[in-house]
Figure 1 (cartoon, rainbow, N blue to C red):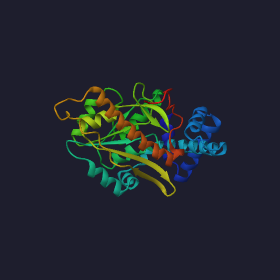
Figure 2 (cartoon, helix red, strand yellow):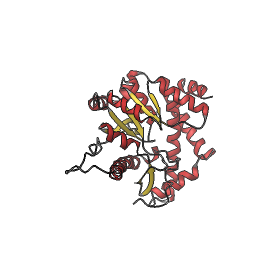
Figure 3 (tube, rainbow, N blue to C red):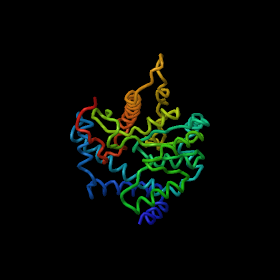
Figure 4 (tube, rainbow, N blue to C red):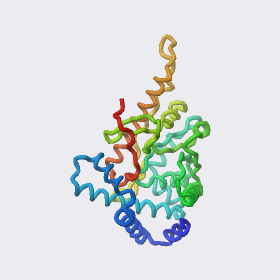
Length: 295
């Protein structure tokens, strides 16, 4: 089924593909009403000052983008190295290559915003060594197609759990390790996201602290003049937390708090981008599951 959809999308013109994406958006939102209640509840909490009409318009935009993003994935076989370089832009490629360094590498943080999978695939097609931390999809057939398509673009995939040592080795070889940081993580750091507590994975902060690699926020979003990469400021973990003057070693709790501060800072950068492009974030996800406010 998924291969057939890919075949169809790759044979459409760009205009026809855009129309198909719009139709899928209507199907997701108005026909199937896929997670529409979750979307509405999330939007009301995130934008309490928006009028009902504004929230309805934003909801339509969210489903329209979901349709467009789905079609973009099915058109991945059309992505060539030349098209990937054009999509990323010379300035972005220069910055990525500048930040890469043997023995340190680069951690790229992103979110389910815009065209996040297309960003990783384009970087790999452009010749960059890209490793992506990913979760499996519940639908087996879709998961096999999705994993296979990204791997076919040159992206090396790592499971979300049990990959710390392998990812550290990738960074020591001077490669890119990319992660998204906007999903609920049971037992994770509880940090603010749109003013509400959100459990967030600590793995990225821990990897940045241990490796010393810089962290670069990167998002491929749709703007009025087409798709473009948005880069955030480079962030670094607190330097390995050496012993304090006098020889006292940092406690595990102090190390954990430092990791949580970095996680909160990175989550704040993601929130800034979501506020800029709210219709392009994955609002169907149940991001907020922590009942109490963070300490």
